[in-house]
Amino acid sequence: YCRWTPTDMKKLFLTISLAFGFLSAEAQTGDLPRVAPEQAGVKSKQVVAFFDSLMSFPKTDIHSAIVMRHGKVIGEIHPAPFKAEYGHTLFSCSKTFTSAAIGIAIGEHRLKLTDRLATFFPEYLPKEVSEWLSDITIEDLLTMRSGFVFFDEVRSEHLDWVKTYLNHPMNCKPGTKFQYDSLDTYLLSAIIQKVTGMTLLEYLKPRLFEPLHIEKVKWEVSPEGINTAGWGLYLQSESLAKFGQLLLQQGKWEGKQLIPSSWVKAMMSPHVEDYYGYQMWMCANPNASRADGAYGQYIIVIPDKEMVITITQCMTGNGGKEQSHIWNVLLPHVSETPLAVKKSKKFTKRWQQYSHPIPQGKVSSSTMKKIQSNNYQLEDNVLEWRSFRFEPSENGLSLYVMDKAGKESKIALGYKE
Image (cartoon, rainbow, N blue to C red; front, side, top):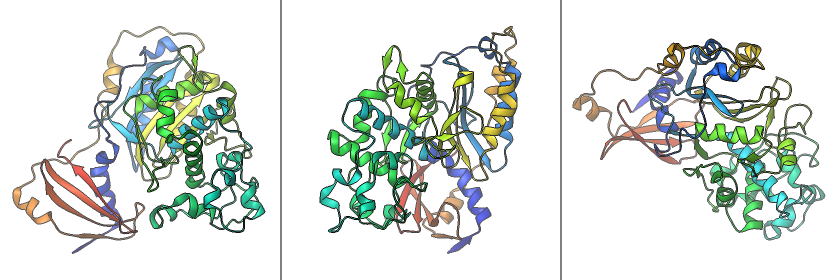
C-alpha cells in the first residue's frame, strides 16, 4: 500500500502518456503534399519559432503539430518518441466530426435542423412529456442548448444513456442557455444511428473517411452500441490536417462535395453569441474556428490566411497559449506571395530533433518484482484515477488503472517505446 501525491501522479502520467496516444503504426502518412514554408509565403524561421514556443510550454507535452497553407504541409513536428504514424485520442475534437455527419445527413434529406429529439425515441420517453422536452431540436443539441441539467455521471453509472437522458431533469427552455455537454453530442450520434441503421462511424466511413484516404479509424462505443460521438475518436495527426483542409475547402475534396458547403459555413459560424458554432469553437482571431479537445487537441482553420494548424498534446496546465502564439508568432509573418526558398536544410533538421525525455538506465529484475502486484492508492487528481497496479505480461508490463467509478482499464507499457 502506498499513497501518491498529485506531483507523483503527474510524473507517472507523463511517463506513460505515450500509451494513451498510440493507436497503431499503420495509419496513412505522407498523403498530403509537402513544400518549403517559403513557397507558401512563410519564413522557415517563423515556423521554427512557433514550434520552439510550443515545445517550451510548461506542463505540456506536444505530441504533434502540423502547419498547412494552400493545401500543403509547410512544417510538422512529431517529437520523439512520438511518430507521425501514431494515432491519438481526440477527446472533444470528435464532436466536429459528428457535426459533419449531421450536415451530410441533412444534405441527404434524412434530417432537418428543426427535427425534435423526442420524435426519434418515443419508446424511451417518460409517461408525461414536458413541453421543454418535446421542444428540443437537433439544432439545440448542436449548439449545446438542450436545456438538460448537466449529468456527466450517466457515462459511469448507467447502461442506457439515451433513456436516462430523456428522463433526466431540465433546467431551462431549449435554445436559451449554453451548457457544454458531451451527452448532447451523443444524442446526435443516436439519432444518426436511428435514421440510417448505421453507427456514426459506419455512416461516415464511405462518406468522409474513405474519400480522405483515412482507413485506420476507431471510435469508442457506448454500452448500448452507439458511437460516443462527443469523444472517443482515434486518428493520426495527418488525418486531422486532412479534415481541417476539407473544412477550409468548404467540404470539397478532389472535386467531390463531401459535406454541403452551406453546412461547413454554418459549422464555422457563431450560433451562441460569438464563441460557439455547430460543435466548433470560434477563435480569438477573427474568422478562425477550431475543433477543440481536452488536454489540448486542436484543428484550427484560418480561412483568410488559407491555413490549417493541428496540434495533439498532453496539456495539464492552462490552455490557450498555443493559439495566442499562432496569432502572435506565426500569422504576422505570413506573406501573400511566395518568398525566396532557402537552400539550407537546417530548419527541417531542427524539426526532426524535437524530443521528450524518457526514463534512463536499466530496470533490474528485483525492481520489477517489487513493483508488481502492489496496489498504489492515489490522492485526488485531475484524471480521477483512484489506484493503479502493475502486472507482468507477455511483452513486459501492463498497467491496470482503477477510476473513481470502480472501472479498471488495462494499458500496455513498453520501455523506451
